[in-house]
Length: 153
Image 1: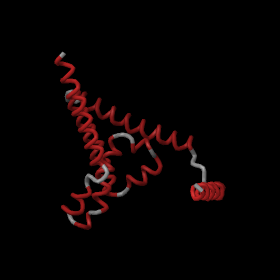
Image 2 (image 1 turned 90 degrees about the vertical axis):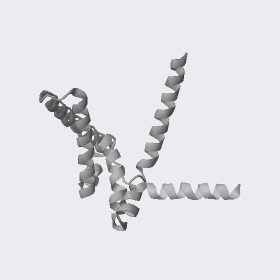
Image 3 (image 1 turned 60 degrees about the vertical axis):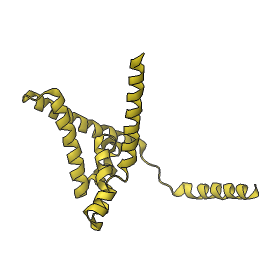
Image 4 (image 1 turned 180 degrees about the horizontal axis):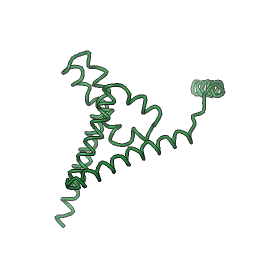
């Protein structure tokens, strides 16, 4: 009990010491950057979708092509390096859409590419995204089974 009290006192003292030196993030500026960046990405995607549909493509195919395009651009920007700079400025506006998922797939692979294609890039490709895929597939399977069972009644 005495050690816990000492630990809490030390942590409280450290927090009080560090507080004046810790910069406060510009929350409003960060929110605005995220809003306008994410909005710009969505607006460009919407315009591209409309252009593809005006060119004669079916809506579903246009939406798929735009999504794949966003993923490819995010992967390319991650591989070449500017995605991190953009993400530092734009924040959640560029991370939350599917571009953030593409970045989380490519970034570990690029970091370990020196170790080879199979044991480096290939092995690290799903380091971050693997658990997301497992949870998503498991949740989708569970929802499908529940839907199927509900349809039996």
